[in-house]
Structures are given as C-alpha cells and as structure tokens.
Length: 134
Image (cartoon, rainbow, N blue to C red; front, top):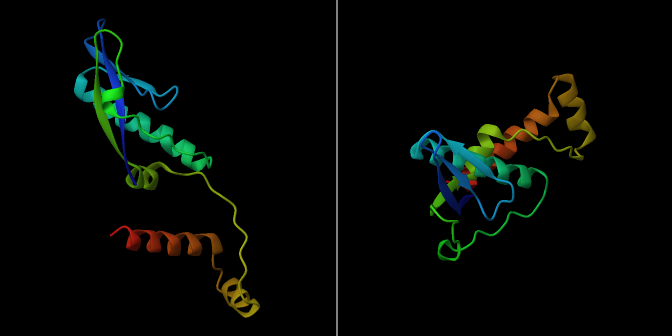
C-alpha cells in the first residue's frame, strides 16, 4: 500500500536542521540536521505512525489535500510518500493469535514431523501476499 501525506517543514534556527509535522497524523513530529535528513526522518516517522495504527486495527487517517494545508509562518508544505508494504515487512512485528481448524490426520502428521504451525501459516500467507502485489 502506497500513501502520501502532506508534512509541514520548519527550519530549526539552532542547528540549520528542519522539523517535520504531519497535520493528519496527531503527534507525528520528527526532525533532522538537514533538509534531506529531515525528509528521510519524516518518511520513517509517518510510516511508523501508520504501521502502529494498522497493527492496532485502527482506521488510517485520510490525507489532506496539499493545497488545504497551511503551515505556520516560515514553514513550507511538502508531500511525503510512504511504502507501507516495504515498511511493514521490515519493521512490523506485532503478532496476532489466530485459531485454525485442520483435519486430525494432517495434525497427527505435522506433529510427528515437528512442524511449527505458526511459521508454516505465516510463510504461506507471505507467499500469497507477494504474489498478489506483483
């Protein structure tokens, strides 16, 4: 899933860095020692914010139109692109417990082989996911 959010960037006079604030993501603020670093930090902070919401089962906020976002004096607005599939694959780690039902004979076979049911299901679902996004 690809998302784009507007961020307000403000120069930090103390170190020539920039602070990034996301109006659509409450509390999502980050900074860097240069504009380039601030842009990378903004992408990471927003991705982490959205991933937390996704893992908690919350609705992801709709992004505001860039022309509707007005920064405070001295700031400017820029769009920040998020690749949530890539970010979640790298940093997502919240586990969800699922019950499943399989035939008894298959359970006996798998237990005799020492199969990790969670790992098999996770691998199969990841494979299906990667095939669906190609």
